[in-house]
Length: 388
Figure 1 (cartoon, rainbow, N blue to C red):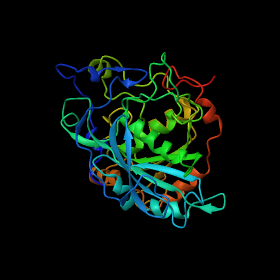
Figure 2: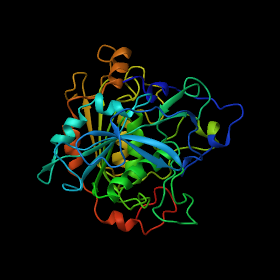
Figure 3: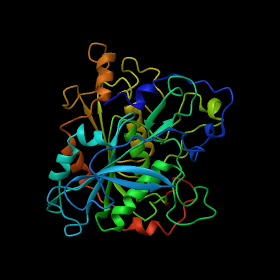
């Protein structure tokens, strides 16, 4: 994997641009008031025959339309499964890291093999979908972040649809975040044609894709009124090498963006999450005591995020901490002899190959109930409004 978004966010402080643009303003509800700006063509993916309905065992490139924009996904149907004869079956949407492509989810991991082997209800098989990210500008103009036009995900503009028209809702009907709208369109496509079980839709991601998968999964959970437009909810999430998607962007958000960008209040009672990370990571640090991590950007300290998720959000989060060999680590690597900068950079870019079956087995243990469909009747006045 090439260097991800997290690598370019390793900053202590970002100073405000001389003339802040409107989209560089924040509030505590939607974060950035406008989506990240697209700065180049979306990379083309070549993961198989183009088709809108892959109902046989193969990898296909599936075209999607979100808010008038063309998007693509690699979609794999498990071996021996024929839809609609054997459907509906579970679906995992897995998102790649920064400056990577959807193809890498299929080529750099063993998720296809895991999708074939994971058994639910006496039958093996997950639909595996990898969506392609766009080229976007980060909202700060100081280098190294603002100087780069990278293939990345937008988890900073937290605008989600309510599942129905609601003129009084500040979030509108369909999300103005194109990444959110794209995942919504993908789920709609396969739930509506009977391919995917609407109670077993899962999300995952690696690096920047993990940040966005956490955001999307928690927003589209059964305990949040911001349900997916068709009424489908995400049942669980499994992410790698990421942190808190709801916190501030810089150490001085009020100065840079006119207000804090962190969500207030944080969501509660959302989806179960499995978070896999390495004990030595130079970007999404294990904790602030790790060498070189004292000035890590907000949200990029894994131990702090796990504590926030468990204590502040009441989230059922399983933290799988791995050593450099992929085995279970006893704790964070806190010395130069156990975690060098070079090793931390390498491990941040590394996918934990060999753990894919365990990831899917974790997801298979959860299902969203029919209450998700009922939630579509309710308007959400705030992004993370929860039932009391």
